[in-house]
Structure formats: C-alpha cells, structure tokens
Amino acid sequence: MSITVLTAAPDSAHSPFSTRSAGTATVLVRGQQVTVDCPAWCTHPHTETYRSLEDVSHHSDAMSLTAPSHQGVEQVLTARISSWPFAGDPATESPFVAFDAVGDEVAQLTPEAALAAADQTIAHGYALRALVGIISGGAQ
Image (cartoon, rainbow, N blue to C red; front, side, top):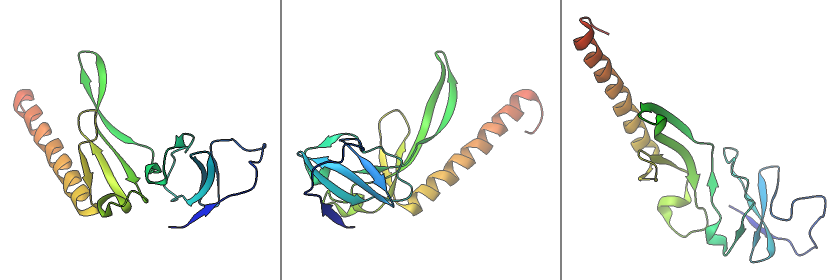
C-alpha cells in the first residue's frame, strides 16, 4: 500500500474532495491532498474529508438478499468487500467481507468464513424449500 502526499495546489478541473485514476484515490486528510492505492473492487467515492489517514477505507458495492415483510421488501443479508488499510488492525488491513444480517454490520469475515456463510445460506434455502414441500404436498 503506497501513499503520496501532494503539495501542489488542487487542480480546479477535479473535485476538491476526491479524484481517482489508475488504481489510486486522491483524498483530503485534514486539508492535505493524499493519494492512496485504491483496489480495483473499491467503488467508494472517497468524497469525505478525513480526520486522519486511519479513517480512509475501501468498500465495494453491496449485494443483498431481500425478503418480504409487512412493510414491503427488506434487505436481510447484505455483504460487501471492505478494508481499512491504514487503521493499524491486521484484521481489517486486508480485504474482508463485511457481512450484515440485520441492518448494521455484524461480522468481518475472512474468505474461509464467508464461504462457510454462503454454504449455510444455500443449506437454509434448501431447508426453506423443504418446508414449502411439506405445506404444498410435494417436494420442492
């Protein structure tokens, strides 16, 4: 992970908050432009002004499983790739799956744990199909 501190005046052709090119993002940290490597999966716009470099994080788009509810349709399982490369925590420095089951991130999953969660979700789907089979009089 590399960091470049820019000392030139901001380019007025670019957003004062963030620019991205060739796998980098230029962010404002306490008013100073800093360029950091940005992973290919990161879709986070990096438009906020950060208090410190440790606050800079990367996030992919979220994917969700939805379920019907009395209010319509709700997202019940959401996951995205995230990392906090400068936070000083080995658990969040490398990319992990941010797994959210109820509306607030509840787990930071390693690739192995994310695969286990996927397998459990698939098994749950088969169990749900079996319940439907019981009440509909046939296997689903």
